[in-house]
Structures are given as structure tokens and as C-alpha cells.
Image (tube, rainbow, N blue to C red; front, side):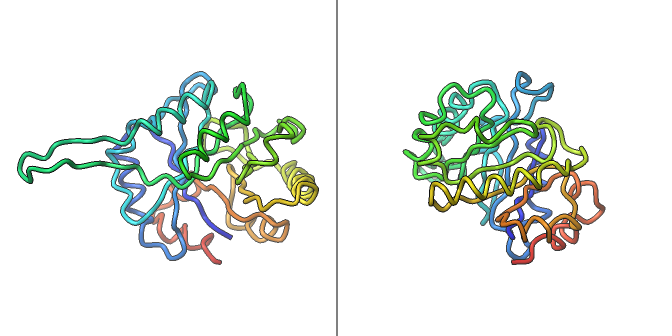
Length: 232
């Protein structure tokens, strides 16, 4: 099962520090950066435009959009690549954020298909995330035919440090039935409130990845904490 270290901060310096702290952990390929606009939840983080200032090294990143109208932030991510002229080298330098996927909360999303199409048009993976009590029936039928990732929140989206809600286990089983019905490969991620003890049960239920934040960053050694999750 893949581990996605989840970065939720309004500080470029803190984001950079967290990336560095887990960059050498075996099997970690991607970090998840939480983007919150202060409207979806009473919290404000870095934006997609800020991320070109973070050096992700060999890692890629997923953007988890907890925002009003996530599509607007997809366009911001597309525009976020910067072009600068380096006078010393007499050359144009393009800075690109290494996006693997963008995952948006559906609760404030006006058009799921349009959202997914905009992401896939960039050759990124496109995902939908459901808050703790949002039913799977809220995913539109046409969206099932396009989605690459479905993320289930184990907490109420917006803040790290909450306790995992056992209700999610039933939701995962229901999700697997939907995936079988549409007969498409979909990556299943669970985000929020996770501990190493929960990982085996989630993996047994067919979960492919977990997004983990506070249980990594609250430890003295985030690298050692990450290694407890990152077994293939």
C-alpha cells in the first residue's frame, strides 16, 4: 500500500522541511499537498501558485483541493508553471510543479465531469474526494467513466489531527462494489486520522494508498514514522 505524506500548511518553509524529511523513505514517490481556501473549511493553506517555490526533488505531488469550486484551482495549477529569465545563464528557466494528480472535494464542485476533463487534459490523474458523511451516490454517473482516483475522508475535511471514523470501513466496501460495476481501474485512497495499526485492515479491503499527515509530522522523526506505513 502506498503512503502519501499529506502536507497542510500556509508556510513554504514548513512544506519544504516536510518534503525533505521524508524524501529518502523507500517506496514514497508522491506527497499530497492540501489546498484549503478558508471557505470550504475555516483554514487557509498554500495555493497551487505557491508550490513552484517548493523543491520536490525526485518526488511528485498530488493536490487535494478542499475549496469552493475546485475547478478554479485546477486552472491555477495549470497556470502555476513559471517562466523566468536567468541573466547569469542568459537563459529562460521554466519551473514546473511535478503534479501527478489533482483530487477535488465534490461537495462544492459544480460540474464533476468538467473538473475531471480539465485535469486529464494536462495528462494528470484526476480524482474525486468525498467528505466523511458524503454518500457515494453523490458521484455523477458520467464521472465514474472518467475518474482515476477516489479518495474517502476518514475525518471531516479541513484540519489534521482528528480521529479516524470507523464508518469509513463500510464505505470502502460499498465503493468496491461501485468500482466492480463500472469495471474500470480506480485507485482508492483513504485520508485522515490514520495510524499504522489501521493500515493492514485498509489494505485487506483493497485500499491502494493512505494520505497521512499529523501522525507523521507530530513524531520526532518523520522518516521513521513514515517507514511504518510504506511497505509495498
